[in-house]
Length: 405
Ligand code: XIL
Image 1: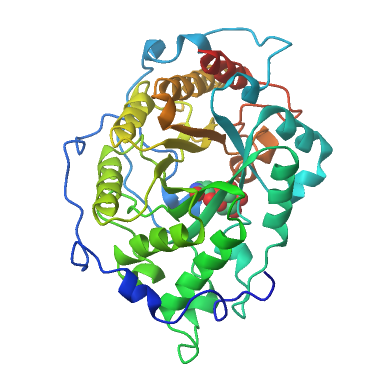
Image 2 (image 1 turned 90 degrees about the horizontal axis):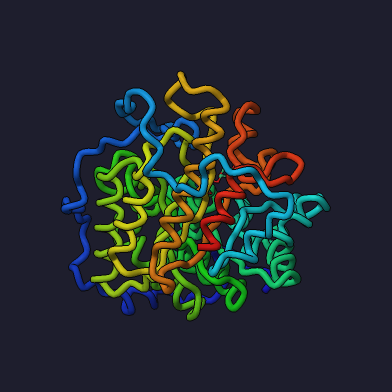
């Protein structure tokens, strides 16, 4: 496969245009509102996107005053001691349980051992993104994702491709494309064909487009891809091309804050429906779930139910539960830790309540606290289900309890 680049690879110039006449007539559609587009009483998201390297900010929502009754949370989370012999997550879950990973993590025997024990699926945390794969000259390199794929294979784990198209990443090689050599759309297709083609038969699914919906839920993200190929067209084209490269993989649309902002959720579902109506092969929905420990009980359950209404498989794709991002500063650390376990429980219980065919997988964004991107941001955070030593926290016990049913 060596030698792939934006300029050289499977695309036959111009071919995609014939194969992709849009049934909905193209143009830049404005997502319409839906019955889901109701005002929220939810607590605000812990991720106003300053943290997400986009430079965008969102307006903050009013925080729910005072402590909310936790009765809506999973009863299994409440005050249970962590058994010394807690079984591995993957042993009790009737679906794949995942974790994100970086290639360098595999050099840490303690973490590699914990991954092998606990999870049955891996998502490369960033090394399957354009930021890693696309070199300044437009060539591709795959060393780190190949290592992760090999580790997954060696341990009988699924591999989740993350992510082909992301508004937040538009490598220079695309921006400076020599269009005498290749048109933009063909380079875009080359990228997807090369990457999804390389891991064809190895991945269980792809986050084909990541975070397509605008921060406040009002329409879709602007991006280099949208500007050059069209707001809807670049998304539909990504799904069609990914399917061409890999006929089997589940092709997911992945986004965040869907539990905090019903308006964003409605736009997300609306986009999914439009894709399906246009014939694009969207076959799963990913909800990232970077949440804070003080999220209002019930919000997560409502979100998972709403998403499931479309009938597609659901991926809880990047779950972590921040302590330091909690808006309610009156809560003690102990109370936040208790709520953190309750959030893990509610998420797992809501996922378990889905019909079996809709439970795609359940992925933790960092297995131990020290591995989490949030801990890198704020050393006081401890958002994971396992502590720094790899011991299960109450969150892990809550997951096991819920997965056992
Ligand atoms: C984050 C990774 O955890 C970081 O290591 C990286 O620097 C930036 O991206 N939504 C996503 C993930 O889809 O890819 C992000 O991962 C977290 C937010």
